[in-house]
Amino acid sequence: MAEYVRGTSLATAPSGYCPGCMHSLATKLVAEVLDELGQAENSLNVISVGCSALNLLYWGQDYVSVAHGRAPAAATGAKRANPERLVFTYQGDGDLAAIGLAEIMSAANRGENFTVIFANNQTYGMTGGQMAPTTLIGQKTTTTVYGRDPATTGYPFKMCELIASLEAPAFVARYALNSPKGVNDARKAIKKAFEMQLAGKGFTFVELLTNCPTNWKMSPLQTIDYMNTNTIPYFKPGVYKDKEAEA
Image 1: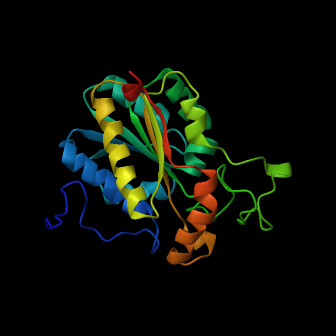
Image 2: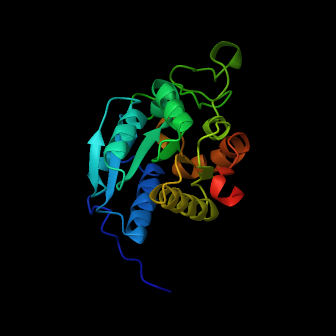
């Protein structure tokens, strides 16, 4: 068995994410793929507002920091101006599916040639645990203290399904980070998304189902069970669109 070696894309700084938060795992997966593809120096990360913004401390590549929800718009400009760069956004559910919903759907509909890594933990993690567009029915948050009620707040957005329904996107997939298989599948999906972008195939989107022990008010171990029982049955993992495989 080969010895694990920290890649150059991942900083040595201690993680500032809450204990047990899967954002740190997602950060590591992205860094590993960048190293494997030899794209660390060629990549550009567009960082929006939220817990995802902490990644500017942990990834060593170039980045652009933008307003809440505007990462897809900024990534569009960055990629068009620098078509040889590997451009990607890393966004949470409040950022992408609420404040930035118009931006993500428009970029996907145009088939912009960049990659979106979407961390879905069903809550506004950084700002106090409010209900997000992906909060599950019955899930308690600081703004749905009795649980989300679809009669007043609607149903959780399924972003992979929405984006896959558009004509232009090239690759759309979702995987959960609460199991070894899910982690391995997620890593493969991120790699495929980056490779398709580098080949000029168009818009690629990878959703990572994550947790939030702090705002879910659970231990990290409890969040793994909660994801198996509640998150994964609603947000089903898998590949939702792959134009390369369909060709």
